[in-house]
Length: 134
Length: 389
Image 1 (cartoon, rainbow over the protein chains, first blue to last red):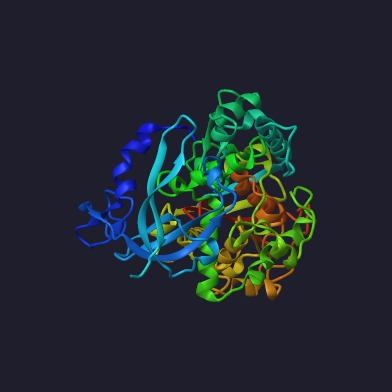
Image 2 (cartoon, rainbow over the protein chains, first blue to last red; image 1 turned 60 degrees about the horizontal axis):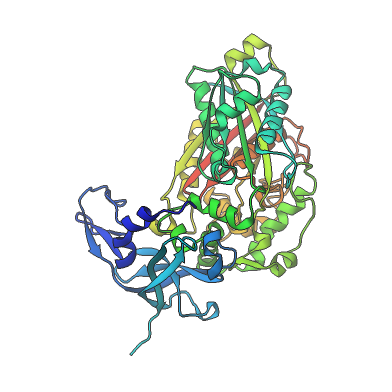
């Protein structure tokens, strides 16, 4: 991929803070945010903070990554359903692949994703870790 | 729909063609199709090239003009059509539309992908461009990985085991051995699949279609062209051509074990063709991964959800079975040169219908279907062909 600073910069709000958009008519929440509701077609959507906890719907271990993710292999990619119903893709971290199970409760943390190159910028974002019950 | 005919087809062998470039693959398949159609290059009024990743893998775009020039017919209308792995099927759809519009009487549609110029991790980077770059590729997901999420959910939802899903690639390799154009000519066993390494758990190497190079081409013409240029006695007619989309990414779907676009495109196609699904005598479906092959059987309505693998066990997909499927070897066995795959499928179905398939010939088929899928079902193209003798 071509390296790009503006591309990372303009998405920072949504990638760093887990902000989505909620349809004012039907209440459906989307991540990333969008201008037209996929469910009811309304154009009235507002930005909302998403739930920071959820559960693992499905997961995989990436053993053959894209070039820019090679230094981090193997890593876990999951489809997660947040407690507000929103589904998002994210990495799971602070957990070994064999410890992951579908239905597992997870919570959002802020982590490094990758470096665009040795001289490129570092991309950060949200990953999920297992919920530690107090 | 008005009559559109397939009068010529051409393919290169699917392989790791270290010595053949993207443009030479395209030209070879196109010239074979032109010669097979017994037309002159000058008869071609429009060119459609199905391709996904030439821009990233070769640094080469503008394939329409490139092919027109290398065929010696600059001046001809031409363009590239891109819809990820469905680029071939969608390019065919556009070619059919161009004849239905009445503007062209004879067009060339060619699919091509040259993957082995790049290393695996760069190809992996190219393939995930089929999904959201910021929020799916951006978190390190791969195309294999997305299908792995589907595979795991399918197993858990329907209680189907890996050894059952592994029957699909075993079926494909069984028939690829007879197809001289196929990437793999060796049979494999369920044990071979289950012993192969994980690429993205639970998807293993032998669940996955291979990285390879290839090009396939078709000459399409109108009824008018046939009248002017002399009839042909073993023809294939396009009964229906349809395309449907689903949400771009899996996280917007209620159920990731169903590809809605398959259902929508198939329903549209049956309506256009004025046929019932039980009239289909053979099909080529898009088994980019073993789990997808199984899911397509269900979404097309040949099996209930969760029961797709039963069709393999019951022998229904065999060349002389109830619904012969992937007798070419499918994406797993024949190979999956991304933008060319949809064209290979249509060529294979057409040759089966004409009774001149180079591999295992299905006994006397009349109607055949090709299903080509882009992304994880973000685009699905369905084309239905009929023999006319």
